[in-house]
Amino acid sequence: MSSLFPALAFPAPAVPAPAEGPGERVALRFGERSLTYAELAAAASAVGERVRGGEGARGGERVRGGERVAVWATPSLETAVGVVGVLLAGAAVVPLNPKSGEKELGHILADSAPSLVLAAPGDRLPEAVGRLARADVDVRARGAGVGFARVDDGDPALVVYTSGTTGPPKGAVLPRRALVATLDALADAWQWTADDVLVHGLPLFHVHGLVLGVLGPLRRGGSVRHLGRFSGEGVARELNAGATMLFGVPTMYHRLAETLPDDPELVKALSGARLLVSGSAALPVHDHERIAAATGRQVIERYGMTETLMNTSVRADGEARPGTVGVPLPGVELRLVEEDGTPVDVLDGETVGEIQVRGPNLFTEYLNRPDATAAAFTSDGWFRTGDMAVRDPDGYVRIVGRKATDLIKSGGYKIGAGEIENALLEHPGVREAAVTGEPDADLGERIVAWVVPADPQSPPDEGELADHVAGRLAPHKRPRVVRYLDSLPRNDMGKIMKRALSS
Image 1 (tube, one colour):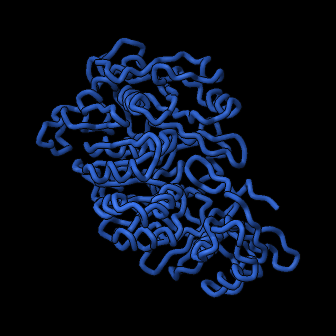
Image 2 (cartoon, rainbow, N blue to C red; image 1 turned 120 degrees about the vertical axis):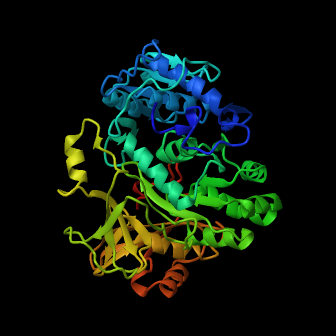
Image 3 (cartoon, helix red, strand yellow; image 1 turned 30 degrees about the vertical axis):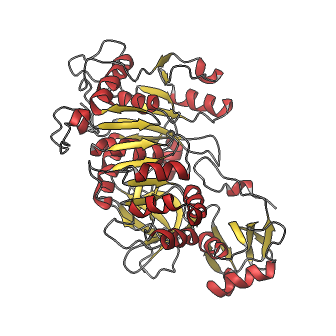
C-alpha cells in the first residue's frame, strides 16, 4: 500500500483512531455528498484496479515505469477518488484544468502521453481529451482492497503543468517523497492532526487545492469539506459546524475582509477557527489587519510553488507577522543569492536576493525537458525559484516579487514590487494595486502603479499616491506613473497576471 495514506489501511496504526472507528470517519465531503474512509478505500481501490487493467491486486507487482493517468480535475468527489486511486495503483496523476483551452490541453496530453483519462460520469470532455480512453469514476464502487502496488519514494506521483507564461506549459514531475515531505513538514508547522477538519473552495488541478487541500487531510486521517464554489456564507457555515482550518488565496480572504463588517456569523466562524492559511500569492497587509481587527485571529502565510511544493510557513506556534511567509519548513534548506550566485549572508530585512532551495520536497524534472531541468538547478543541487525576497534577522522570509516581473532596478536600487503594492493598498482610495517597471532613460526603470480605485468616479491623483508611498517606504520607491483600471487581470489562483499589463 502507498505510504501516502496510512489512514486508508485498517487498522491504521499511524493515525489515532477516532471514537467511531477509523473506517467510519468522514474523509471527504463535497456539498451533500460524502465518503467515509472505508468507502474511500473501496472506491479508490476500484479505480486502481481499472488503472491496472481490471485485474485488481497482482501480488504486489509494480506498475509499468512512467505510467501516467489524466484526471479531469473538477471540484468533485470523483476527482479526489480518482487521484487517490491512481496513487494507490502506483501510477502518476496528470491533473487537467477543465478551464484550459484546446491548444493547451493538446500540448499537455501530447507531452505527458497518459494511458487513460478519469472523469465523473456525465462530464463532457473537449475533443483533445475525448480521444483518450476514458473511465468514469464511480464513488460507490467497491474494489478488492488497497495495497496492491509497490512504489519507491522517487517514483512519480504527480505531473503538474506550470502556467506557461514564458512558453508552453512544462510538466513538473513530483515524486512521492515530495508529497510526503511537504505534508509531514506542514503537519509539524501547523500542528495538523486527525482531529482537524479542513474547509476550502480551491480548484483541484493545482498543488494548493489538490496536494495541500485534499491529500493533506487524508494523510493525517482528518477530513476535508470542499465548498465547490467559494463563498463567505459557505465558509461561515462549515467553520461554525465544526471545521477547524481554512485554506484560501488572497482574493478569497479579501472578499471575506470586505464582508466581515456586516456578517456576524462570518466573524464568529473565523474567530473560532484553529488555523487560517493563505497561499498562492501574497496577502496584502491591509487585509491581514482588517481580518485581525474583526476576528482577533491572524491569517498565516506559507510559500511554495509547483516545482517545490512548500518551502516556508509561519508556524502555528510562531509569530504571525503580516507580509512574511515565515521560516523554512523542516527538511528545507533556503538561501538568498545575488545575481552572480553569491549567497546573501546578511539578514537585515532589506537586502534583496533570489530564493534558492534544496530538500526532499523538490520535483525531479520537467517532463521531456532536460534542458529546462538543467537550467533550473545550480551545479550543487539548489533550485532557482525566480522569487526575490529579504530575510529578517530571525530568519523570517518576506517575498518582494518575481525576478522576471517584480524586481525593479531604478536609480541604482533593487526594489521589490510587493512592498509598494502593500503601501498603495493602505491608501483608502485604492481597492486593488499592481506594480511593474518600464524602461526609463534616466533611472533605468521607472515604477509604474496600476490602480483600481475604490471610487472610480473620484480616483486618488498620481501625486497623492506617490507621496503616500514615499512617506511609508522611501522616496526612491514612489511610483513615477499611475495608470487606472477597472480590474486587474488574475488567473484561477487569484494571482495577478502582470504580463497582461502593458502601457
